[in-house]
Length: 136
Image (cartoon, rainbow, N blue to C red; front, side, top):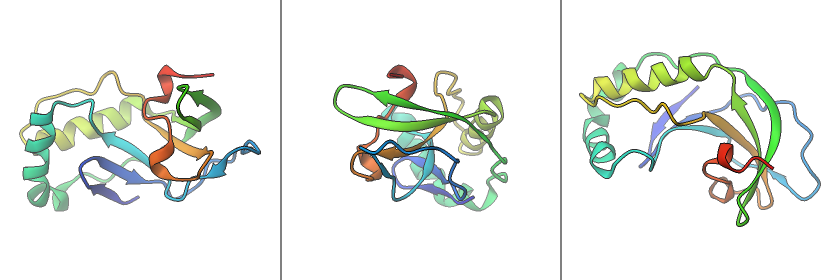
């Protein structure tokens, strides 16, 4: 799995979870798990961005993950077909280790790691950003 930082920290998902995609949705063009996003303070994201070039070669290997059953998230503005990562604590510990490499002490205890598999447009930016709050 490829870890990237482009304003947010993500890891590409190589294997698509086996799900039935609703007829009004399309497969998302770039499946990924968001690991670090806007839920962190601007200062934390700035510090991580500054440290990224020095730590990206020293990141621990991203753990193998599996996905739970698919569900639809509907925020009223966006709809997504989502699968939560089963190994939440393992991914959370990995994120905390990466933050520590950047001398950042933070714990994303409130984030539910997931992959958005489909949405009405198939665009990665058109998914519900925090689907665990909008489970239909």
